[in-house]
Image 1 (cartoon, helix red, strand yellow):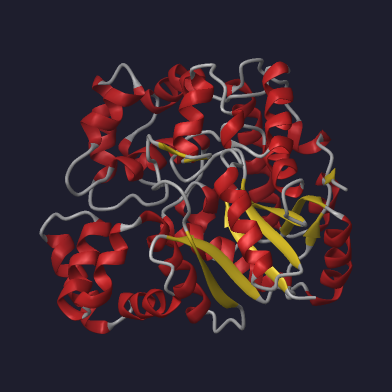
Image 2 (cartoon, rainbow, N blue to C red; image 1 turned 30 degrees about the vertical axis):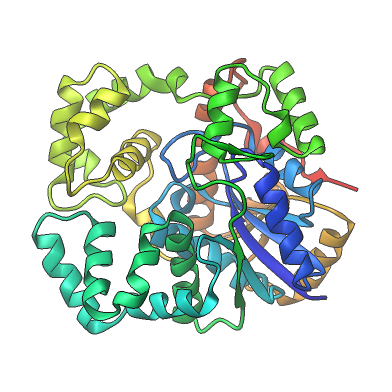
Length: 396
């Protein structure tokens, strides 16, 4: 059974995601496995809905198995995000192709860019550019322009940038998984425009935040799940409900405490510490800490990881287990195969973690604590214990 892997946040699942899965199946995939971010995402914010609801959306729209990307990798920069997700697909032992959205849609060009990233001359130029005060993304793109100008332009595209990191991880791990690009349909990443029935996830989140109807931009089955979650007060989650708690926690922390968080270097902890002493809102904090060198996204992630208690040590290496969120009958068959092929333990319920090593227990306990915090970002806050009482989604 030819199996494709897709790395996603589904924040929320929309028509563009359905298109991506269908194109992946059109390319020959008989089964689709998704590695999906949990309660907090790459933007350094809570996801708009509970992971189980987003997983169910995917399972009712073409996915067969959804597994979780743990927090240290889901709320991280592109390289760490890609490393965690790709390593999970390798660990499954049954994935043949890695499918991803792309602005350019050209695998050859994406592979060239992925190779260029690790070129010695590029790495040296990157170091020089960073010393000039450029942020990482700009510094790397400029470094590649000097060596491989024909591919450097794609690193200005958000989906292509992630695609390059996925391919790079496949290369570094000598993986047998083949990359497959699906041209992005509809609108650009983070666009505020609607094209036919396609819109960016960020625009859909804004529509939901304004309590407006986004059903035309979401497959019907996913829209039904969204409607149900909203009616129960379990969507949309909003970081504003955590704002005071975040500011309060950071005000009790020293620069040395902040320095333990992932992606902190070159004195960034001092800048955030100073900003925390002045800021009375998160947006003000981000604005005060941001510079040409430190992007808004990086600041948001550092602030969120500091608040949630994620350390740089937590991000080292790969996720220590495969945690299943849901499956279809085809996904159930994949799970049977994985019992023999998987190189990591498969976690179906919280009790399974008690049999694992200390690192796995640390990551799961962190996930559980963070889920309890996420529960306070919902319109109707939930009590603690979601990670211990939640059930696996079994879709038809």
